[in-house]
Length: 449
Image (cartoon, rainbow, N blue to C red; front, side):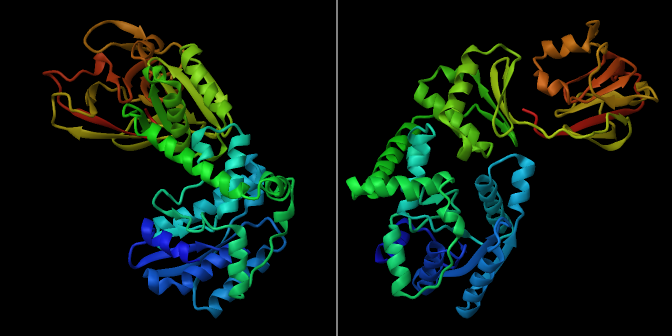
């Protein structure tokens, strides 16, 4: 295992005093990693703790948690256990159990980072895992990015120091150091894709090509180098992102297809969906950008919706439908509007427009004015004295996407629209020389790009 120490130092995985959380299931790989980092903690100048996630999917989950806890107590290693109901979430979300377990596990790790409890999470993925990952990605239609496999370090947080270590080397280390471990009975279930490759495909490949695992991993490194080279030429600075929404200028889809597909994959990853994306999904988005009709949309797996909106292709995560309030009385102070954000109304002495807010004559607002969403028949007197126009046409002229018109608050009196949130006011609310009282209306918007 000397090569692991050398790799850690060479690539500077940890800084002095780093708090390292070892993701420890109790299996041979993670127990070897926990033991290795613990016995070398002084050499590496790190603080080691174990993080165990009980997924709530197996009868032996409690047994495994107690096993890791007892080992940590005996070896004076800090231990943290978390339980997630992955089985229940899998049924309610309609996702595969393996994927839900992974998402739940990584959410625990991210929460530990946010709380400042760990500086790094260390994962026990090894060379054989890497070969399986690369084959899985290739079989699912991945390009160079997927064929590159797993990284030593991801997001400057997840670290894989065993990535160049074979399963045989790990087992040898376990037996030499008499490290106890538990077996996960699901590891033999060949209905799981990874297990099928592990127990059925790779052993057959190694009979013909003994160095198959090592060669697949070397291929992955070559793919990673080539992919990094291509990405170094990519410049997509005009992509807009706001939480779960991304807007890509349509002009970007005129670049070389190798760049375009990487750009689309990056956007999927920014939405947190890189693991479940296949080549066909990327191809669908590229084809839609070139051939789809303006104003249309397509639905993709994992609740992704792609819209063609004027000069942009917009990728968004579909909102969960829920019962919401549909009207809000106009008032001073803060008003929260579901799926939009908040509206703040305050009195002001300003008589000229203010950047980032709308200025209105307070005394011209009808007493029964309400915030609500668009209805057929709504009209507005255009600011500047340009006459009355249907709000539907007004929003179209302003190139407001259809998906946003549904959640855009309007201050209305009947079908007369007095304020269109964050966009404009009616001429009827104009502040003039006779204005005695004025309001500034500010908008704190979420998911609006």
